[in-house]
Image (cartoon, rainbow, N blue to C red; front, side, top):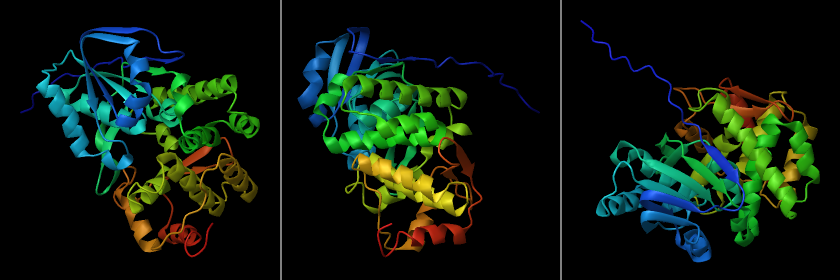
Length: 351
């Protein structure tokens, strides 16, 4: 005997990404702004002059990737329960990628899901993390292994917040922009080689292009069952680096930059990319003062850690490798011998 539950339906998760000065926002509901001490100290006043709600609360979580954990999620959830938030209430992610990921995840699980919006304050979160609905937290096994796809209702990208961004954080955001250029758009990559990102107008063009690129990919593959996985270029290697260094040595974008260099080495070994193209990508990363080398202490352990990646499947690891510049290949057909050969190049000496 079978009982069928007919749940086939189309859910419209569409939303707008506004790249401009933050408009006046009013919400006739309970709203909680999730932020950290650094962002609130610099920019909370700016936000509070532009946002109002029936009831407005501030929830502060510690700053740093190492705090992207269950304890911080519990801090958010307990505050929501204490203030009697309901399913009509809303969260505002006000910070970088860590705040955005945790806010989205808390929104996805509070009373089985409430709305949230993104107001990203770092370049990395503006061009990548705030767009696409990936939410989550880290645990002892790796990065973002616990989470949910939960799309925001809106994203507001205001370049005002970048005025206080440290140079290192800015460069980390550039790594994510370069990631999209290498995998999807050679003309964008060539433009970035000549771009002056200290010029506000040029920077806004680059942000818009990066956001448009990611938006197109997300629209094609919201739940990462296919082409969206290409946006993880550099991440399979980078997440292992972050795990090995306990999230304290490298910013996320810096680890991704190193991961891109490693992925390019794999692409060269697979004859998908020329050495000159790999060198061109590495040079552009170095132009923005991003790290491009990493010493692997235990190659075998590094290899085994790949299997904790969300993109792994049983005994196969999925890798994102460039096909020249502007195209990409998603493959789980890399042998252990091939991978160890690549990893050994990052062993005793700098790559």
